[in-house]
Amino acid sequence: MRTTRPRPFDMEERYPFLAAYRRTAVRLHPRPGNPGVTDSSVGGPLLWPADEPWPVCEDTDHDETPYATIADVRRERLLIATRNLEQARGGDGAAHHEAFLALRRSSRARVPEGSGGGFIGVAQLFARDVPDLPRPAGTDLLQVLWCPYTHEREEYLPSVRLVWRDSAAVTTPIEDPSPTVWAGEPGYVPESCVVHPEPVPEYPLAMWAGTPTLDGLEDYDDEWAVTHGWKVGGWGGYCGYTDIDLPECGCGAVTEPLLTVGNGEWSTHDGRWRPVEDDEFTPTLAHPTDWEPVRTHIGRAYMMQIFRCGAGFDCAPTVLMT
Image 1 (cartoon, rainbow, N blue to C red):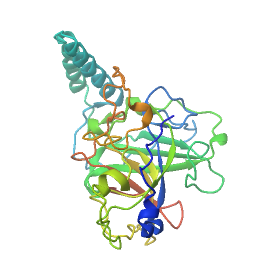
Image 2 (image 1 turned 90 degrees about the vertical axis):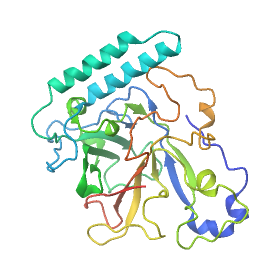
Image 3 (image 1 turned 60 degrees about the horizontal axis):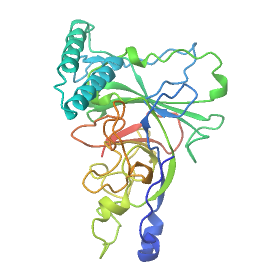
């Protein structure tokens, strides 16, 4: 369980116009763990039927060459965390650093031909866990996958695939092949995390068109408006669309916010948006930093927002760096 600190006053009582802008975001609060295929997760294994091909990216014009498999990226992180912990305790961490370098050499020696192309599981969300999860009738599960390379045609972001399904129909699941896929950008590799969904009200950033000046409310954008971290729904951030209108789908329909890929779960300068339960955080090898459990990095410390078509569920998602 994770609980966001309440705002110290009623936002809509002080600024009544905000009521028209309120949206509910579901903070996922991902934390390192060992989710199974029947659990909601970020970076965990997907419930995937054996008779359905695993998706492959058809875009061969990736910005990066293969770096390492998903499993090896996670091993590298563990070795670095082990080295850093040993150094913090007065050791030199040399053995763990050499193991990291050996793993890097091994990865370089095994780089496949071409530029990669397999998708990896990024998030799996069951309707039973996420209140008001958008989904087609007859489905109860959203699966988010992406190709772990930068794609110019996708606004220099990973190429995203959305899958909605009826989980009860998956009677013979396969073992998720994500760990064996090669990634071009380590920052596109999420750690395996359990989630702790929590609905939280959000308000738009002050720069958005139609939002009056918020006199007397210092640091409104950072402290009171948009929550940080991985979330379903809610509002976007600084560098995305800059007016009150949502971006258009390729079919011309207005889109709706679906999933935000956070670049950290809260602000490191003041801890705003840190859940109450994380006040007494103890670093571990699996979880070396409290504010960055998933270890994904979008661009230069941005977030990625994934939108779905507001007219239905058949169109490809729209993605923005925010």
